Image (cartoon, rainbow, N blue to C red; front, side, top):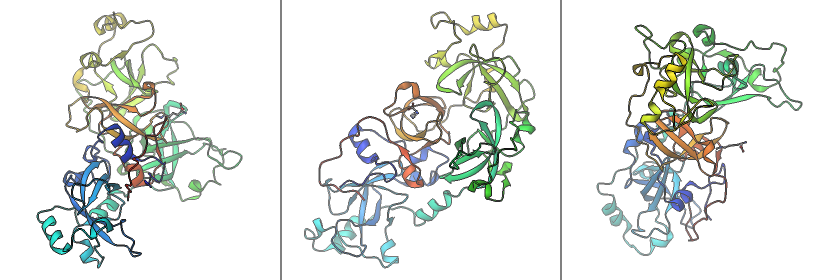
Amino acid sequence: AVKKDASSGFNWGCYLEKHGCLAAPVSCFRHVPLCAQWEDIEVGLQVEVLNTRTTLLTKVYWIATVIQLAGYKALLRYVGFEDDDSYDFWCNLGIADVHPIGWCAVNSKLLVPPQEINKRITDWKSYLMQRLVGASTIPVDFHAMMAESMKCPFRQGVRVEVVDRSLVSRTRTAVVDTVIGGRLRLIYEDAGLGASGEVLSDFWCHMLSPLIHPINWSVRVGHLIKETDKSVDMSSHPAFRKVFCDSVPGQFKKLRTVYMEGGFFTEGMKLEAIDPLNLGNICVASIRKVLFDGYLMVSIDGVEIGDGSDWFCYHASSHAILPTGYCQSNDIPLTLPPGYDQATFTWTKYLEEMGAEAAPRRLFNTDAVEHGFAPGMKLEAVDLMEPRLVCVATVQRCVGRLLLLHFDGWESEFDQWVDCESPDIYPVGWCELTGYQLQPPIGPEPQERTSKKSTG
Ligand code: MLZ
């Protein structure tokens, strides 16, 4: 039987084969384990891998060749099957019992050929010698590097400031409850507990997310922070029984320095911005307030409540703010304020009408980058509207630094624009690697292959 992704019953290998899709390579994702090393992981590599095609009771290994790569997953074929693909199997290189050539010899493990080919080739030693000449393999310290790169500076009990999901214009103090693959489950300090002790309000984000900050950040940059309601008793929750520890700036992603002298963003300037509550829309927007350290409060024109509660904080270096005209020059539909018409809207007229000026183009971080993503590539991506969910997704468009992500099986209303260096996108196999639950596409599951194939 085909073994499925333990966490969700979803099988990436079958899914990619069925749809004939490519996965974005691990080297596209700067923040994930082994990104830098992945350049050397390629089709044709040979590895020593657990031999599942044997009736022996002891663990034995055999040599296999990488036939195809999909994120962390590799389609392997045992040496000796030559062009016969019927026993190919997908495995996650990060967790499978996969080792560099030579590992068995060093660790006194047995290399035994699969039963199907054992009889076909009599002199295995010289056969292998022939097949392994000039072969490349994975680095000797592959698994050690993997473990090293999965370390995380956050643990349960660390206090942070994070956006308040019930009022996006302010932050709120929260405590780290769980860490999985660098993703943090944060519990607001005054979230409250339900009748059976369940947390009433939490938030998930990656440790490199622009939405979390060290303690005292809000006061330092001049951002609104909710005063913690001291009357809420959280002490019976495990995350609050730990010795608290305030997070410090060194634990967070360093943002690109912006120079505020010599003409920076000013209040009232117009721009285009990703709607923080509707991440598939790029909208007509305004700078509402300039905070310290390059942070800005931005609002979406025409839909404002009026009390500032829907302003949103973006750093000046954020991918989510764009110069006026960006959508037009990149053939992206610009979401207009209510009452305006796509056919007649022009920025020149709008600015004149509003008596406003456009934020200068040079202030935006729209540098082109060679990110390696291409339309059609599959990946695992956070649904930022429900950031606990990591979902099966497809790159729909690439525009400069921006990727438009589509969630497989979902309407296009769920599509989201993200930066190519977003910490919320992961290679195929990341969930399996880190033990995070993957949300499979909704709708009918692709049919599994009916051959006698088995996966490792
Ligand atoms: N409760 C939501 C979940 C949507 C999750 C979509 N992820 C791509 C709904 O069903 O609308």
